Length: 462
Ligand SMILES: *Cc1c(COP(=O)(O)O)cnc(C)c1O
Image 1 (cartoon, protein in one colour):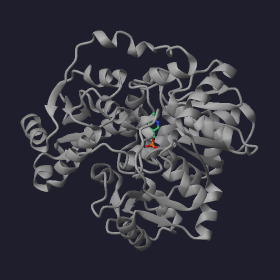
Image 2 (cartoon, rainbow, N blue to C red):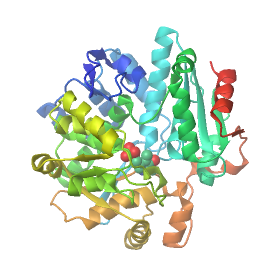
Image 3 (cartoon, rainbow, N blue to C red):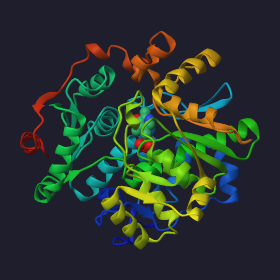
Image 4 (cartoon, rainbow, N blue to C red):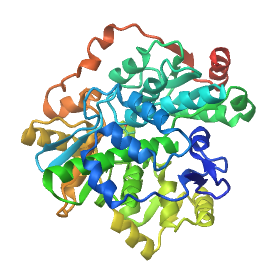
């Protein structure tokens, strides 16, 4: 399997190179040259496979440059840290199925991909004797999942900027209680936007980037999407076995379009998925895209589901590539226009195709709280505010006759304030958070200035 860029200037590269490249060198996003099709035998066998075995069977269709034994061992090690034997169990609650993606070390779905990505990086760096320094800014979830993905790994140091005093208490403690020597938490005296700007400026210094082998862990890495395809297939298998229904619908709380794009890939591989419900919070650019054919940037509003407070969805370009009939020239023209006008428009034919794949709904903060409350009253089950966006969208849209699987992207204990407002008490804390406040911490507070961060990285880089 070879990989190409949506912008057409990179093609024919193997999987390993695609993982190390992250963003394609022409500014596009990497995709497989063709999407492998599941056979009738695959569809018959997959529902009975344990998660790691299923992951191997799916990943092997996209990866032909890592020996089978090595790939199996990378997968097994990545999911050994999950606290549920099924890794991503599906539970029936009320009128929906909940796909619990929060049994990894940081209690959010990003662990599913970042545990694997950390192991892949370590494996690929060991092969060439190289090293890398990962640099990123976080508003909470991505940073901690990335830190847990690479803690203690050989050949990798990680530097994560978070805004001092502006991430939730649980999120701050999850990051700063990781004391492995290769992990550097930097609490900047500024905002998340300052952090993003600083990281962007440092990556823009190409000489510095090269000298320190800087790497990123944002959601544009193809390996992250690939790891996420697995749980769509797994959940389809579980629900098909439980209900006898062939087709299912997924409801996906969406920010960067990464998670729902993995669902799109699963559908394109031939998993019987009726529809993908694209659920957004008040930052609804993607819902407007599906419902009105209008993709235009607005302001970012802070909401109760902060990990989806995004306007420009970095993975969206991957979907557009397929919508545009795999025409990279058309992608280049569209993004040139988008750069100028901040807006993309779609033809009637394109809108029909979008509507055949997706349904969309946006959910504001009042509706999030209402859904957490009413779902809890009806079932006793506590939703986190991100998961509530997806469940609300599933309830708001007219149902088709396929069972609906809602992706639970975070454990409610990560967002106790919102949950408390909705149900009048804190969510129960899982054992992995016990004694969090008492653990030793490692964090530097630092000025929100590019030069200061650059100097810090220079001093502590591999
Ligand atoms: C990142 C995140 C999302 C959004 O995922 P995308 O891949 O950006 O669409 C949803 N919920 C939680 C809890 C997250 O951390």
